[in-house]
Image (cartoon, rainbow, N blue to C red; front, side, top):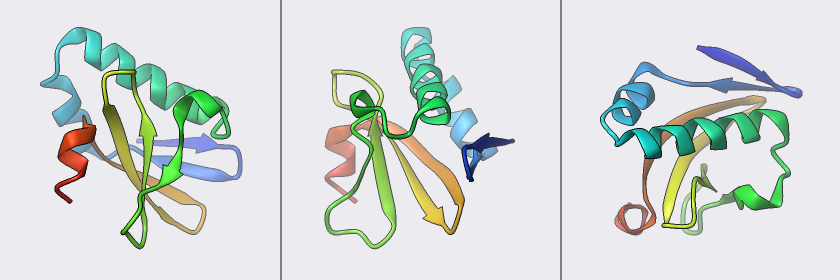
Amino acid sequence: MVARLSAMELIIPDNFTRVMRKKPMEMQKAIVAAVNQLREDPSNHGLRFKKMQGTKNVWELRVDGNGNRITLTRDGDEWTLLNNCNHDILKLL
């Protein structure tokens, strides 16, 4: 699935969706809301969209206030969603 994000392309791989569907419904809704916010306004400060420290090309954005994040990579104007997980898991990457 490819969604336009201003001048960027947002790519949502099947694996991302598969992992999301295993989450509780509340978390699924929060993930969808965060992705929609990213589509509408990637500069929205509530997303806390930033490059992850210690990585070359992995970015993260906030899903909720409980430490849940979405990770993604960038290749030119293409952004690919990687994972939706808890912030503590990201520390292990």
